[in-house]
Length: 460
Image 1 (cartoon, helix red, strand yellow):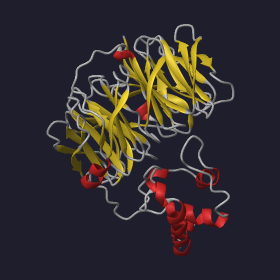
Image 2 (cartoon, rainbow, N blue to C red):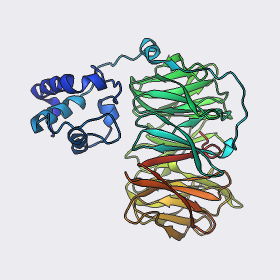
Image 3 (spheres, rainbow, N blue to C red):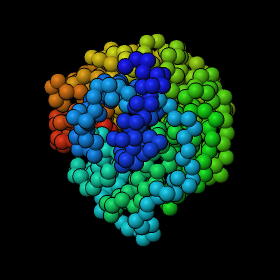
C-alpha cells in the first residue's frame, strides 16, 4: 500500500467509505466517539496489514464488527490511506472537552479503606481496554473500569483514594478505590500520550499528540483548568513530588518543560537533543534521556537547568524509562535494556560511568528490581524472564511463565516478596512468583495484560 496516502483519488474514495461505514462510531472528523480516533498519531508505527486485519475481521470483545463481507480489497486500501492521512489543525478546546464531561459524584465523604492501599495494584488488560484493581496482600480482584486502548500507565492519586487512567483516545477516567466505582470522565484530547498527578493531588497534566498541547485538569471536579502550548510535539509528562513540578519532554525540539504544579508557570530548559525516552533519578534532581538514533544519552540537572553530562551509548536505543535503579555499599546503579538489541547496560548513577553489559536471550523492553531483593528481573522479548544478580551482574536464573508465549513487564508487591509477570497474549495471564524460591504462587487469566502497577512502587 506504499504511496497510497498521497493519491488524491484514493483519498477521496477512502473518505467516502469512511463516511458510510466508520463515521458513526469514529467521528466525522476521525476524532473518535465510541470507537477510537483513526489518525496517524493514534496508529503510530502500526503496519497496514494489521490495520487491514482489524477492518476485515473486526476486533473481538469490542464494538468493532468485521467488514470482510462489505468492503473489497480496493475499498480497504483506500480506507487505510484515508485514515492514515494527517488532519490539518484539529480542534479540541475547552468547549469540546466540557461537552464530554461526565460526573457521578464528588466523593466529599472521608472513608477508611478496607485494604492496605500502599500494596494496592492496578492491572491493565490491553486486550479488553480495562483497568482492574487488586488487593496486593491476597491478590484478589476487587473492581474494574473500561477505559479503552491505553498507552501510558494509569496513575494513583497521592492520597490513594482515587486512580486516574487515560486512553490513547484522550479519555481520562477517575475511579474511587474505596467504593470501587467510576467517579467521572472527560476527554481532554484526541490522541494522548500519558498523564501525571500533581504533588498536592490537585491537578492532572495530560500530554496530547492531537492537538499538540498539555491540558491541566482539576483532579477533583474533572473539569479543564488550562491549556498549555508546548510549541512542539510533547512526548511524555511525569510529576516530581519533591519539587512540586511536572516535567514534559518534547519529541521534536531540544527542550524540556518544567511546569510548577501550583502556579502552572512554565520554565523551558534547552538541552542538546529532543528526548524520545527518559527516566528520573531517585533524588528527582536529574533527568537522563536520549532520542531515537542518538549515540549518547544526556544528563539534565534540574537545579542548574542545563545538560551536565553526555554519556556514549553503543548499540540499540536504550529504553531508559524502564530502568531498574538500586543502591548498595558501592553506590547507586541503573540497568536498562536496549530496544532491538539483546543486552542490558549498567551505569553508576551520579558518576555516570559504564559498569558493564549483560547479554540476554533476546531484545527485551523492561528491567525491574526492588530494594529488598538481590536481583534484577528482565524480559527478553521471548517466553523467558532472566534474573540477574545485582553484584555479579550474571544471569542466575531463568523462568518461563508459559512456554512459547511472550513474557514481559515485571512488577513487585510492596515488600518485594512477590513478582508479577505478564504473559502478553490473547489467552494470557499474570503469573505471580515468590522472589526467594522463584516458585509460582498464583496464575490469573487476562487478555493481553499490558502492565501492573503497585501503589508503592509506581513513583511518577
